[in-house]
Image (tube, rainbow over all chains, first blue to last red; front, side, top):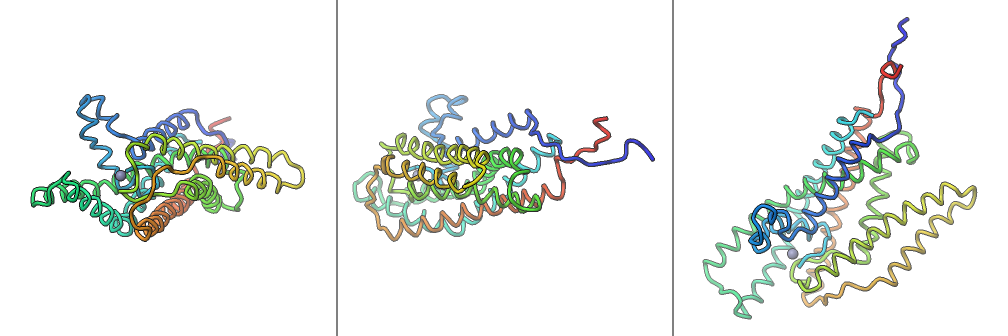
Length: 71
Length: 242
Ligand SMILES: [Zn+2]
C-alpha cells in the first residue's frame, strides 16, 4: 500500500492572498455600485468625470434597487 | 485550502447571484423607477428646468437605456463584491455554522448576513425610489447607512464571540445584540429627507427592492453551497503535506 494514498483533510485556514484579493474586490465593488459620483473616471478624465458621472448613471438603478442612498 | 479555487467559486457564485438580482430588478423594480423618474420629468417641465420636446425624450430614453443595461453589469459587480465578503466569512466560519452539509451551512450564513446586513438596516433606512432623496443630504445619508450596517455587522460578530464563551444561558448573546440594535435604532438620526411623492409608489418600490435583494442572498447561499459541496476547495491531498 502506498504511503501517499489520497486521504482528504479539511484545512481550515483562509489563505492570506485570498483574503487580500476578496477584501479588495469587496471594497472596490461596493464603492463603485453604491457610492461613486465620478471618482473612478476622474483618475483618467479629471474633473469632467464628476460632471458626466458615467459610473453613477450605469450603476444608478441598482443603487436605488439595492437600498443605497441616492437621489 | 486551494487559493485560486476558493476565490474562483466565490466570484462565480457572487457574479451569478448578482446577475439574478439584476434580472429580478429589470422585471420588478424598473417599472417603479420609470414611474418615479416620470414624476421628476413632470417637475422639471413645470419648473421650466427642461422642455417637453422630442429632443428631451430622445436624450431621456437613451440614458434610461444605459441605466437599465447597467442593472445587469452592476448586479454582477455588486454580486462579486458582496459575494467576496460572504466568501471570506464563510471561509472562517464554515466549521461552526449550523447544518450537516456545506450546502446547508452556506444557506445558514447567507440568511444570517441577509438579516444583519440588509433586513435590519432596511428597517431603519429603507430604500427609496428616485425623487425622494435630497442631493444636499447625500453624504449624511450615506454615512448613516454605512454606520448602521457596520454597527449591525460588527455587533453580530462581537456577540457571537460572547455566545461562544457563554457556558449556559446563551440566549444572553442574542438579547445583547437585540439591545445594541435597539439602541442604535433609537439613537441614530432619521433619514432627513421628507417624502413628498405618493406613499404608494414608495412602498411598492420598497417591496420589490426587498424581493430583489432577498433573491440575491438566497441565490448566493444556494450557488456557493452547491459549488463548495461539489468542488471542496478546502480538501487537499494529505500526501502533499508529508
Ligand atoms: Zn438616484
